[in-house]
Amino acid sequence: MKYVTESDAETVRAGENFAGILESHSVILMYGEMGAGKTHFVKGIARGLGIDTVVTSPTFAIVNEYHNSEKQSDLYHFDLFRLRNEDDLYAVGFYDYIDCGVIAVEWAENVPELEGEFSTFYKVAFTKTGEHTREIEIHEITRT
Image (cartoon, rainbow, N blue to C red; front, side, top):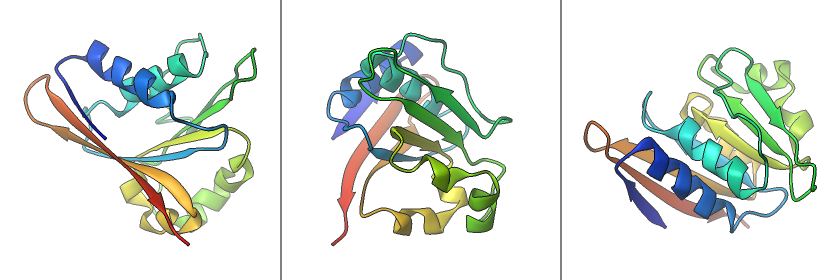
């Protein structure tokens, strides 16, 4: 699946559209440079999951939790920008969130071993192709 967006609003809409295929325990690992649209995409995911609260980057908090009063699914939004390895993931309690809801992870490239933790996940690559233009490429990865 691939989206090309030309504004932050379009990136949010792409995330909202993508949320339609997510299940309650989906894992989304996001890759891309700073300013590529990862947080805007998560804003759309939250909207698509029926979460109507302000979504912000969890850069300093490491994780922001968004709960859905309708219980479609809760969203756990991680930012691994300041983490470097699996020990850091354990230290921040990342693994306590597994199977609690949808997990969206920004800067997954900072902890490469993270991909090996899940049998199924979505790998989402963000590429800046212009000042406001982004390509968002999504692959569902399933390991047996």
